[in-house]
Length: 290
Image (cartoon, rainbow, N blue to C red):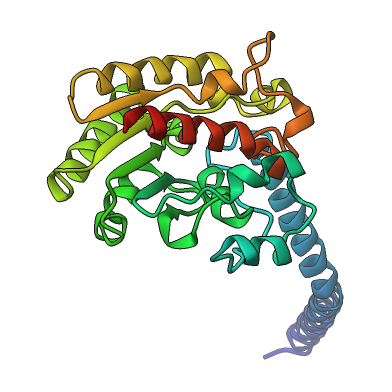
């Protein structure tokens, strides 16, 4: 190979070396940039996690807030008191003295050993405020007609001659039940009570009204709807010779067609002395029945 050719090849080798060096340097620079980017993202990761958690909490809050605007259908009638151990008129005087007017004491002292009251928290107040023996009041807060069917043996235990039933208000507040469903269950309860206690007389009590403000906040419990079901109760009572309809509702409804807020602390439950009208009606009913 001649000298000029060798010189030319040398120049080519030099040029190739420069190109390779530049390529390696460039690649190293890119790798460094990539590492820097990774480190930067790693440093920002806690911030991303925190922002994501805040976003999730915000979404949950919005969902809960929106769901809270929906109308509740769970019965709100829970007693705000604890069941008192009142067993005699003397116990009543010592336990809840001053709760009931002096004019009601004669009514309180009139006990009916052969009578049982069946219902929910409203009926439960009869024993809590001393109007009736605890063993003769088969009632619990939130009780539905179906639940009462499961207490037939307990109702029959005192061997009552008279059974007063006030049920249906909690059922009305369940949107899953139609009026026809509630009526059908009411009939089943009446028939089951008669099958277990064929000699007992059953008094189907009308549901009481609620205050205007209470009805406004509980759409399923308008006084119009309560009146409609009371008519059905009366119709049911007329089908059986062992059932009598007892209109307790008329003792408490005002001229405006609702319960007076003066005798109810929450728009539904009665104040202690307000039970006097109810108990007097029971007393008169049993007196006329004998």
